[in-house]
Amino acid sequence: MSPGHTAGSTGWIQTANNPLSPIFFLAFLPQFVDPAAAFPIWLQFLILGTIVNAMFSLADIVGVVLAGAVIARLRYSSRAQRLMQRAGGTVLIGLGLQVAFQKSLGVTCRDTSS
Image (cartoon, rainbow, N blue to C red; front, side, top):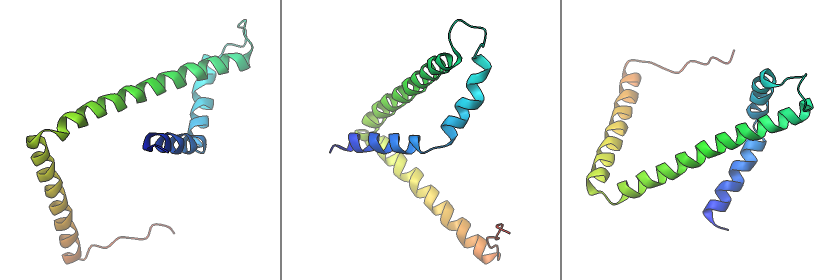
């Protein structure tokens, strides 16, 4: 099985199990449904849902293609690689300093579950 196939399958499974998608559609689409229209309400929901899904999917595809193009260019640029390594190192050093200063100041995480 190819990595793309595995990632696609995982994405579909996660989307199908995400309750936020149906909640979004139930909150968003009714304002565009007209009970007096020639089409039944269920068909209006189906058409609008299909259009919204197609638009979101197209936006995702465009984002993936553009990200792939940027990564392909950055992969062969030694200057970009140096910059990313320095930026990553700086972030890690900054996080390490933050942890060190939190411990020296006695700052601890609080339990907010109660």
